[in-house]
Structure formats: structure tokens, C-alpha cells
Length: 321
Image (cartoon, rainbow, N blue to C red; front, side):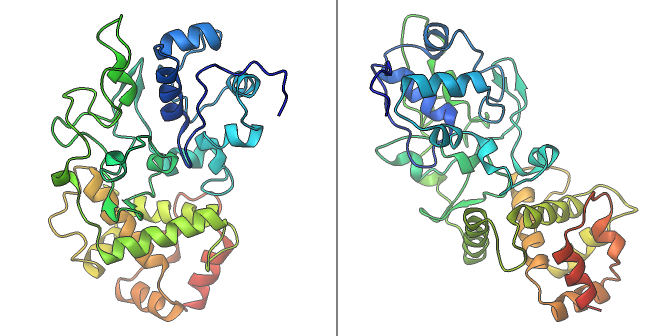
């Protein structure tokens, strides 16, 4: 560490797997200053909340953090979602499907892009995890609870930074585990929904794939996620002309889609369609062959609209015939 660094007086280290925006708001609280003022005085007034700062990280911000903390360049960049490059996604356009969008309109959020675990938010150290922004994150394997994507009371998106708005003279009045809109405790016991064994199996497989950078299907994890999300999109499609995979998934995994509204696009549909995608990709060559034959599925049903078909999937399809 450079001893000539001018470390911020209220510096606190980010928690493991903490996302930048969560660490930043906690850092501001330690300095007894609002986030807008912190940015004005310490970060040359760089905009923070009127953009998806966790996704689009300005190089200037990285350098400022490096100058005034004991964090290394790698540790700083690991706070941002771009750290999933070549693990979760390979091309920039692919991250639009693997990372939940926030629907940023000035300082407001119109989409439920940030999920959370009610169990984790009830712990002594309150912070938001980076993987809670991923479309593939459905449960917390630590608490074995379903992730939620909005306030269960008022249905507002999770915008913890807006807890500091309202009174110009006061600091963050409420803890980060409260809804910014109705001030409901997000960690209440009746908000905790236990995850079933299939979801635990799915999330463990997904987390291991992301952490290792590979799995038993492919040596490149981003190729697996590319096919997983592509299948999910085909399952929730509204197209009548290209609905074979959707109809096949509903017939094959009927219990998963029981009482699911395909018009809603809410978290239950996204969860169960992702589970169905996972189960299709987990099929053995023989089982996959039977699945395709039973529902008259063709190669084009799987590969339509895909730029690059991973070889491992082409091989899987060929081996099933």
C-alpha cells in the first residue's frame, strides 16, 4: 500500500460479494454525509444515481477510489457487474439478458432489477450482494430462501439509496433493509419463502458454474449462460409461429408452470422458465433425443435468432440423433 495515499477518513472495506452502490451508500453514512454531497466533494461531482453505476463504471471513478482507499485495482473492479465479463457474458449485448435492468429514469427505477434475500437483510451487517442483480439468481443458497425483487407491501422496486431523500438536513434515517417508499422491513419473517430442492440444485449448479468459469457441459461458462437464457426467452415467447419449445416445456414440466401467467412477466414466470431451461440442458443425450422426438423439435427451434451456436450444444443435438 502507498503510504502517501490520502485515505478517506470514514473509509470502510466492502463486504464479500458486495455491489458498488451498496458499499458507496454505506461509505457515505460512515462519513456522515449524503451521497450527493460525497460525490460533489470527493468525486468531482460525478453522477451516481441517474445511471446504472453498478453496470457502467467510469474509469475516473475507479481511479478516485484507488487514490483514497487501500483497495487494489482488482478489488475495486470486482465491485461492479463488469467483473462478470467472460464468466456470465462474453459480448456486451449479452449482459442485457444476464443482468437485470433497472429502468433508470433520472433517480428513479421503473424495473425490479435488484433482488434481495430477506434472510440476509436481517443480519447484523446489512448490504446488497452483486449476484442479486443477475437474472440467473433465484434463491439464496446460504439462507435457502427465495430471492424477492420488490417490496412485498407496496410492490416498489428496491432503491435503498432513496432512503436518504426527503429531508435535506438529515442523513440516512432508515437502515438499508427498509423499503424506501413505505418503510416496510424487508426482512420480516412472513416474507421468507423456503426454496425447494430443485431450486437448491439449480442455484448450486449455476453458482458453481459462475465461480469456476466452466461446468460439465462446456469449458466456457458464458456459453452455458448464453444457451440457458436463450432457451428461457423461447419458453416465454409470445410468438405463435416459433412456440414449439414453449409448448414442449409446458407439457414436459407441467407442475412447474401450474398457475403461471405467461402474460405477466413477473418473477414467478422468470423463475420457472429458467428452471425449465436448466432441466432441458441437464438432459442426457438419450433423454434429450426423446424430448425432441416427442415434441417434434428441430434444430432451428433451438438456434433461431442466435448469433453463435456453442459447439457443445451442437454436439449435444447431433449426439441425440
